[in-house]
Image (cartoon, rainbow, N blue to C red; front, top):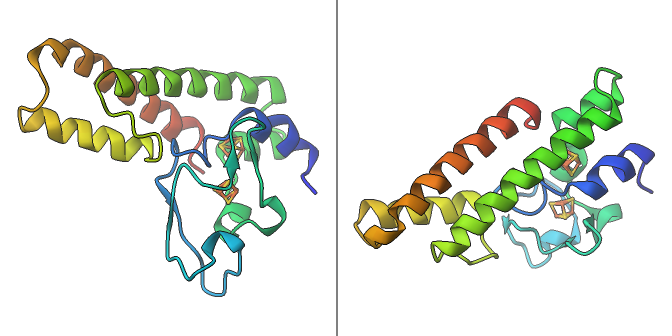
Length: 162
Ligand code: SF4
Ligand code: SF4
């Protein structure tokens, strides 16, 4: 059963499940979550157990140990009374807006494989640019992407990584 705080924040967020905060989920020793069925040693994000329509984990009761343990700064702050729910929701909305901007720019640049995390898509884009594989007409858009990623990673580092 989800607690009320997770209802209030996580169901509006999903950043730690769909490839924005993390690139994958790995089992801890003895982890019996069905996410790792078949002996998988890592599951790439966006996590296949994340349902975007409801912004929820479909195996919540059986989620991996790492998912159980992770609480971002916003969730922790609200839990311990140093951040209000309203302020946390503002940070979540700000991060989601920046993530949507990064998503849009990556897609416009042709890095539209939504089965990969943001970090992997951005790395591929940077590598293509370094190898001269991006057309010159896209260089302004690349600069916009680099700026958006810089702003997103700054916000995540300050307000989300625990
Ligand atoms: S990043 Fe924080 S608020 Fe968002 S889903 Fe994860 S734990 Fe919940
Ligand atoms: S298993 Fe559930 S909680 Fe863990 S990353 Fe996937 S969707 Fe999120």
